[in-house]
Image (cartoon, rainbow, N blue to C red):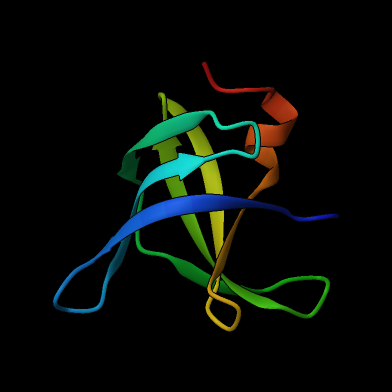
Length: 87
């Protein structure tokens, strides 16, 4: 699966916890993250990368955001892409 990298504005707490707040897609559309649904999980992906997975609600829809701590880049998981744009 090809990754779709996006811009994410996130908050880092004094304890080091990371909370995505806003995401921006390539077309310039911007969405507020309603809330993070739980603590991030670190999983080994099929392509060998190890990303932090953030299950979030965006406009009331579940979305998985992926954070690559090595490259400091965010990508978006398939739920948003399969379900079409969030409006």
